[in-house]
Image 1 (cartoon, one colour):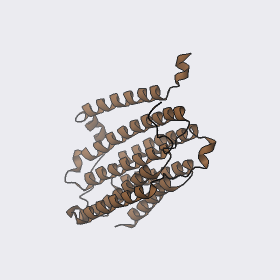
Image 2 (cartoon, rainbow over the protein chains, first blue to last red):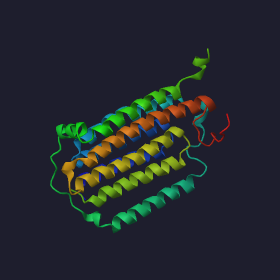
Image 3 (tube, each protein chain N blue to C red):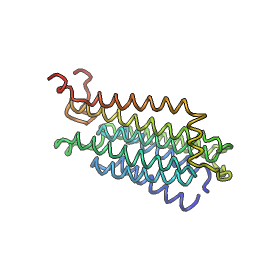
Image 4 (tube, chains in turn red, brown):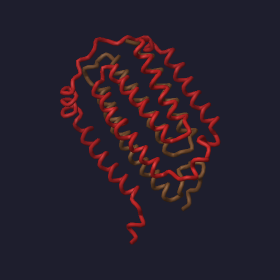
Length: 166
Length: 103
C-alpha cells in the first residue's frame, strides 16, 4: 500500500463518513463533496483521467449542487429539532457493518487481493471518443435517450400542480 | 502501486458507509446521497478491475464507469424531483413521518 493511496483513502472515507454522520444536512453535502473529490483523485491514481474529471464535473459540479438546492427548497423550521437518525438506526448500522465484514472477508480470501498492476495503459481522450463513436455508439445513443427522458420526467414530477389547475 | 485488494477494500468500505446512511438517516435527501455513494463504490470497482485486468486497452471498464455515472446523474435528478413532489404533498422530508401511502 503506497502513502498516496493511504492519504486519498483516509480523505475519501473521512468525507463520506462525515456526510452520512453529521446532523446538519448542508454540512453533510459539503463533506460529501470532499468525499467525491477523493474518489476522483483515486480514479486519477488508477490512470483513468477522463473518468476522474467526469466525476468532478458530474458529482462535485452537478449532483452536490442539486442536493444543496433540494435541501434549501425543503427546509422547514420545524425539522431542525428532529433527530437526525431514524428509529431503527442500530439495526441499520449492524446490517451495514455485517455487509462490510462479509465483503472484506471475501476480498481477503480472494487471489485477486495481491494482484499487481500491469504496465500503464495508453488511454487518451481521443481513444475514448473513438470507442464511444464506434464500438459503444448504441449504448451512447440509449444513454442520450435515457437522460432526455429522465430530465423531462424530473421536470414533470417536480412541477407545481396548482399552476395547472388555474 | 497498491495491490488490487486495497482498492476493493476501500470501495467496500464506501459501500458500507453509503448503506449505513441510506438505512439510518431520516432526511430523504441524505438517503438518496447514501445511494449515490453506493453507486460510486461500484464505479471504483469498475475502474480498479479495468486497471488491474488483462486487457486495459479495450477500455470496457472506463466505458462502464462513464455510463454508470450518467445513469447515476439521471437517477439523482429524478430522485430529487420525487422528494420535492413528496415534500409539497406532506410538508416534510422526514422519512419517519412519511408513513402513509394514502393521499
